[in-house]
Image 1 (cartoon, rainbow, N blue to C red):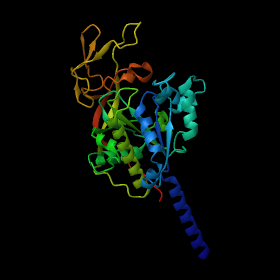
Image 2 (cartoon, rainbow, N blue to C red; image 1 turned 180 degrees about the vertical axis):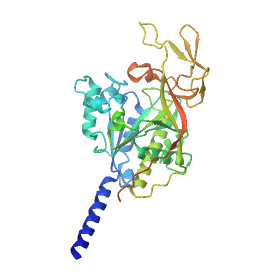
Image 3 (cartoon, rainbow, N blue to C red; image 1 turned 90 degrees about the vertical axis):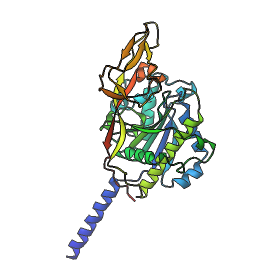
Image 4 (cartoon, helix red, strand yellow; image 1 turned 30 degrees about the horizontal axis):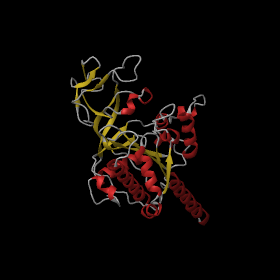
Length: 351
């Protein structure tokens, strides 16, 4: 009986050890920026973080923070990309394609070698990719269905966002955190098919802030980016310590990406679109758009109405985003559904 009891105890210890290993702490957190080289805000935020290492280590002691400038060559040239959009290069198939040539395909493979391999065995526990937009989107947290941790972190940020006393900022930039916050969700349960840099780690999410021109810094966009980032880090610290608050609701208000309505092509000799955003729609990101509402004004002055192809009522985002003049990034206006998304089950972190 003593031997049997000892065997049972040993088996229980092994089972507990296996469970602990299956739900590790979030330790290595990589904050990436400059994925699009002419989006300066994220790079600037990372430079600010580099000056605050002692403060950050005290505020988030369980996290090992790293900064990564993802596309340094494009950033040096103030260009979105050199040969192709880096933030479309991270599907498993793209990473495995050895025939792809150009700076960004090779850069994506180098980043995966540093942070991956893509998926549950990645070296990076969380990748937070910082972006800006020329569209009037405020502060948008971009999460994916495949990553429950990111969805819970986004819910935490949203719950704290209106609290002016929560991580408002330690200097004068904290005065610029007034941008509204929303959550954009990609309904993709398969991490291998996600094309974004943030998908290369075990967990990932993106912060998108605007409006701001390309190749320029705005204090309000820097402040909003930094505030969202610090709240995400605060959530991860709470998560690691078993203190992450329960969601206040079984669902979360999100905008689910449905695809794009492209604008018409311009003349063969021109790289410009063949239409412009209708004045009544400009700067109205996240407002409802109904079938039959004005969408574009064509080059010849005629109107193009929204035809309901992505739903009778949709919520446009990235309206007149300058980057979407590039076919490589996908031309047009993105459309969303607004839904109450069920909060996914969250693994319990090993203490």
